[in-house]
Length: 253
Length: 132
Image (cartoon, rainbow over all chains, first blue to last red):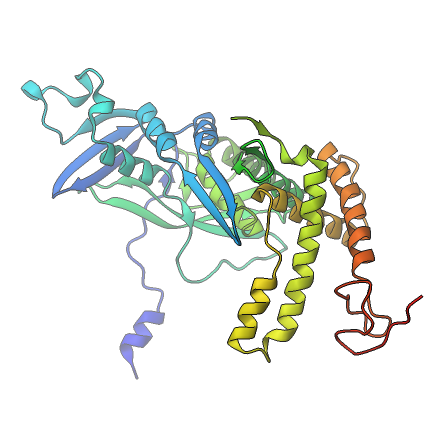
C-alpha cells in the first residue's frame, strides 16, 4: 500500500487558525530584501470600500475581432492604503523618530510597499482549496480565501476557507446583478468609443445583505456572527463582493 | 471628452441585438461544420464570423436583454418593476427578432434557418423552396 497516498487522503490539517476577527485593526507585514516592515491600519468601513470600488477604472475597447479590457486599480488602492494607515515600523528615520511623527509620512513610504499593503487588503478571492461544501435544503455555500493579519513573526496568515451560506438567489437577484454589470458609459463621442464600466459591487453588496444566512471562520470581537443581521453589519464589504459574485458565475467583462 | 449612456441609444442597441443574433447563427453553423472541417476551412469559418463594430457595452446590454427575455418566458413572469431601459430594450429585442427572422426564414422541413430569404434550397437538408 502506498502510505504516502493514503496520508494525503486523511484529513490532516495544519493547526486551525483562530477566527478572522473583523473588529480588529489590521496588522500587515511585508518583507523587502530581507527587511521586515510592519503596518497598523484601521479596519475598512463599508463606505470606504464603496469609494474604492467607484475609483477603479475599468474599460473595454473593440479592435477588429478582439476585445481589450483594462483595469486600473492602482490609484484607488494607494488612496485606500493612505486613508487607513495608522503607523509603520521598520524604516530608518532621522533621530529615530517614530515613522508616523514625520510630516507627510504616508507618502514617504515607498510606493511598492503601499501597493503591497493594498494587495493584502484586496486579497480575498474564491477559495483555491480542494473540495466543496455540501449544500442542503436548497441553500448555497461559497468559500473564499483571504490574507488578513500578520503573526508575531511577520508572516501573513492566510485563511483558506471562509464560508458564506446564502439563501438560493431568485431570478430577480440574478437579473439585478446582470443588469448592473452592464452599467457603463461610452467615451469618445461615437458608438465605437471606449466603454467605461461603472461596476456592480454596490449591487452585489445589496444582494449579499438580502441573502446571507450564516458564515464560518469569522467573528466580530466576542460576537460569533451567528445572527444574519450582525453579518450584514460587520462583514467586510470586499468579502461580500467576492462571495456574492460566485453565486452568479462570471457575467462581468 | 463627451460620454453617453449606451442604454439610451435605441439604434445602437438594436444594431447590437441584430449582430448578436447573426453571431449566434454563424456560431451554430460553424459548430455543425467543425467536426468535418480541415484547419483551413475552420480558419475560413472563423473569419466569416461577423466583426463587432460597436463599443463593448452595447453587446453586454444586448446579451442581458436576450437573457432577460428568455428568463421571463421560461418562468412565465412579467416585469412589474421594469426600468425604462428594460422596457424599451425588450421592445427593441422584439423588433430586432422580427427583422432577423424575416431575413433568415426557417426551412419548412428541418427548421434550420437559412442565410437569406432568397435561398432556393435548404443548406442543411436540401429541401427545395418554392418562389412566389
